[in-house]
Structures are given as C-alpha cells and as structure tokens.
Length: 314
Image 1: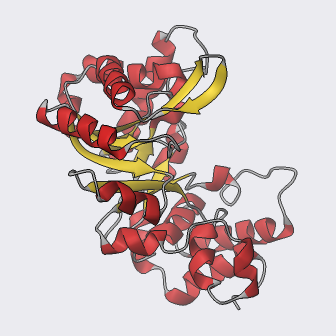
Image 2 (image 1 turned 90 degrees about the vertical axis):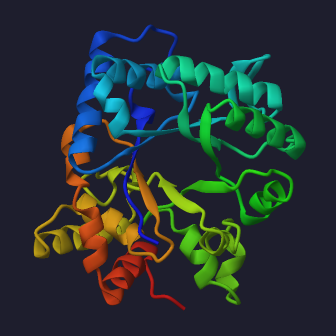
Image 3 (image 1 turned 180 degrees about the horizontal axis):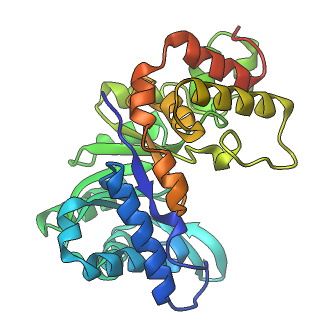
C-alpha cells in the first residue's frame, strides 16, 4: 500500500472566532491550495468545526474563484464534534440528525454537491450504530458522500461499527508522527514492561492494514520540532533528532520536512501524512517526502526512531 500526502485545511479561514471570513483569508487559502496541488497533493482534509466553519467556507470560495479546481481536488470532511452549544465547551454527537445536519452545512460552506469522504471526527460514547448506518445510507443514496471513514478510533470501535454499518470504513485518521510514536511503540513493546505505559490501542494499525483502511496521520510534522521549530521545552532527544534529521536532509539533498514525513510513509501501512501548515514555503518543502520514503533504508528508519525515543529498542 503506497501512501500519499494529504493537505489539512485546519489552518485556513482566519481566526477561531465568529469574525467573518475576509478576502485576505481566502487569498491565503488559495495560495496554500495551489502550492499543495503543485507538489502533487489532491486530497484536502476538512472538518465542520475548523475555524468555526470558516475553513470550509474559505476552501469553497477558492473553488468558486476557479471552477476548474473542483475537478483537481478530492475533499474529505469530518463531523461529530459540537463546540460552544448547550452550555458546554464541547461534546460529541453522532446521532443521525446531527450527522445529516452537519453534512448539509459542510456542503453549503464548501459550495459543492458532494464530498468524497466523510469521517466521524471522534468516538461518541452515546453513539447508536443503527443511527450512523441510517445516516450513511441516506447520504450515500442522495449522492452527497462518496465514502465513509473515522478519525481517532481504535480497531475494536471500527469493528463494532462495521458489524452494523453497511458502508465500508475506508479511512482512519490518527495522530502519528516521529514525535507521537505510541502507534509504533504499541507493537514494539508487546510483552515488555514499558508497554504498560502505552495508551495507543494495540492492533489498530494492523487492523487497518488487514481491512484496506487508509491510515492518515494528523500532526505529521510534529509542530516542526524536528524541522525548524525549537520550543523552549524541547528535550535532549528531540534536539538530537532534529540534528539527525537535518544531517540526513543535507546528505540526501532534500528538506527536513521530507525526512520527517518520509519516515512515516516508509511504514508498510501506507501512512498518508496530513500537512497542516498554511505556509507555502513549508508546504513545498514536503513535496519530496514520497521519494525519501522510497529511498529510506531500514537502518535509516530505525536511526530516526531510536533517536526520537531517546534509547535503543528493547
């Protein structure tokens, strides 16, 4: 399974506020979209809550400026998180009525009749799979959604949904990066005392591989810790890993971003990194990731992994 880059639109649309979208916000979004297309990205990841809906609106206005762009992009969006409603900062709602309502709003903001994939954003403890199944069936029959997936779900949660929902789940989006390594550690530390401290649900990566579920990695650039950012609280292992990433990038005539993302894409699960920056320079710096993944040797992959974890594997 070969992964590809996904452009994450969470950074588009201006401030996280009720302030209206501005022309400048749309200009920024258009620059990001065009650079993403330039480096071969065709998947654009959205969510109904991003920038209070303004991220979807910004992408919609970019598409309206140049209608030909719609045929060049594939759009996925997410629903299930409700913010600032009913006296709560946030809660989850995967009821049929909520799913249908939120998808309708997303389509309006995006200015499209259909999204290619709809993801359930977070597991809802109160979810009724029958309601999810009914919502999926209605959206599919109406031609409003092409396929369905999840975000931040374990293998057991996905299997539970699959037992009732007729539609296959084609994507699972999880936080995965060289810095957020629980997804690797869960497998490496089987039958090891350190494994007790790992919260990532063991078997989720393997489940997705076995069922042809695309794995998408949000937070893939690790907030730039290894590729330019130097936060005050960066650990010694992170500092050393950043030096290694920079050294490897220099030796391979590429960018640190490509090395960091290539490490993810080298995994046989075909991980698809989600690029969340709105900076055109950083977006372009990611363009060589697939080539670096293909060229990365096993020892190179392990050198990055062990540097990031700060100690050898068991």
